[in-house]
Length: 341
Image (cartoon, rainbow, N blue to C red; front, side):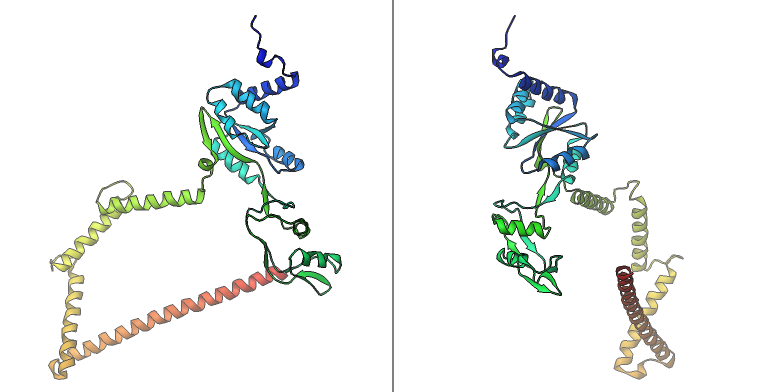
């Protein structure tokens, strides 16, 4: 009988833990390595409850996780490179992208701790607070937050950036931000990598901007449609547009070439009328007696029609602007009504 000397000295509880991890990896479609550093125990328990039925979180020592991965071998052991600091395992039958999105949504704002490095600029907005005058006024001021008394309450009198990205939070400032309920940190399960059917997906691959992705597809579809129309490549989607384009181009060609067809006669007569009036206007500008009374009347009617058309356009624009202003005022009043009841 062959004895495994490598594992014979391992305590039973550790061996049981390793076997449990291996069994979970075999039971689920995929598993991932997640970072849990900085997550309070209470918050972690809530995340586990929220994910129940969709994903299972297993917290274990890094050494035991690494041992389980190595014993399973093949692609599984390659996941060990993502074990770092505080680590847990996540198991799910979802696809990797859905799992990543799910874990990102589970992240919540959290207070910054003294000495922690801020991931972004921390801005305290000018606003009233619920604090009555007292020692907190001086504490806020010593923390670099511009505070004052107004109407019997402590207020932040101006907006100020109290901490720049990458700076460490002083103890007093961290405490005051917490008192003001400003939570600049985002705490959650940080998915580092996922193994699915032998393939490892890194977090940067899983982080898909869905809005940008959709916009890119929509843009590609528009460009493909325009290209097919330009190249006159008929498909079920563009055939109506191609026929309409061909009809318009054929009519324009017929008008340009003065082809006498029943469908074009109205446009041809209109074109001839416009050209005749242009010639008459040019002649009249040089010599009023160059055109007869009938043509003068026609020119006057054309000029009046042009002025009327321009006036209608201006009136339409003004009416539209007035309507938009009225609509904006109504929306504003409705907003005030909703605000004050």
